[in-house]
Picture 1 (spheres, rainbow, N blue to C red):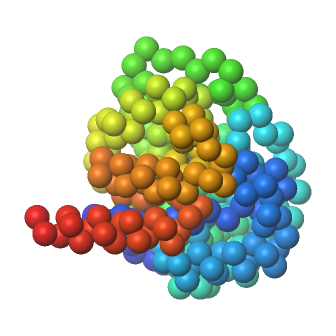
Picture 2 (cartoon, protein in one colour):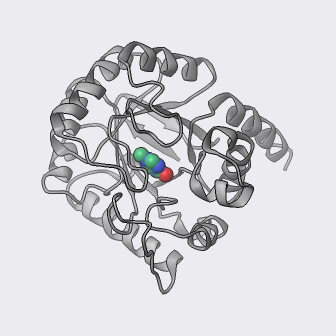
Length: 275
Ligand code: 9MG
């Protein structure tokens, strides 16, 4: 199986690592450390050195309670970083839910669009359909501002699967080939710890035919709830979560700590290759 990501054709025979580059002053996990373009670009290059397979550049925080950012501000944060990194040896993804920025980012060389609203916004499917980029369709219950106030499901695994299945059908109907599509259950996006654990343990049920499965657990609140640690001290927990995800069927893990995750996955793969 492959993921077609612009001009890049990525094999999904081994797990891929997507490195997170936040260009936000209010990001929950790195406190806006990379809010300045030059530092964000340097950080991204470091992640490539550490073994990232894809970079994900975001200019609007989606942490619970985060305030929305205008198109102008998000563009100001993201495009210079993207322009500096596109044309490199790995694909660059843009993390945005704004169709206007999707279009500009693709023109600037983005090979993937990571949309936490699964291209459900007006004009989002059209912004990507006729391009060669990959798309990540994520599940979220509610909106980042309020999503953690009262998440509610009858059967979280079935509901998330049905939602993702519906969004894949919408994307395919819009002209996006399955080999360009990634789905993501959206850990922490309108989910309690129990919902997140149910999804992680049943991840295989979320694998949809011909599309890649991405999981983002890195430094998230659920790991804080389990370990009692602050975001910056959740590296070990994040690596354990990434391994659990891959063991349960994830093709791509979205992480802050690329070197640690890459090492762990190298060991995991070596053991798997014995079978
Ligand atoms: C932007 N962002 C934050 N967390 C994420 C996750 O878990 N998945 C995806 N696709 N994007 C995320």
